[in-house]
Length: 102
Image (cartoon, helix red, strand yellow):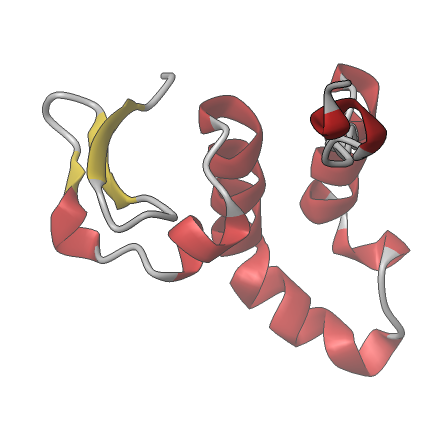
């Protein structure tokens, strides 16, 4: 008798990562472009000033597939605007070269 057959195997978790659809990304970008839809009157000045930054963040996340933590830890000197690449420090500590869409 094989006693190993009596032991249950390890449980494998199959969780699907949530991803935004193209329409959802477009909806977010539309809201970033039009700050009137997001906040009361007193906050609009801040939203207008941060509009380009927010747009760039959403575009980078949606077009490159980098994680939020990788974006937060991104330094400007890791962005190569000439070759349209970003050097990203990945979850395991490795550096990867990521292409930026125009």
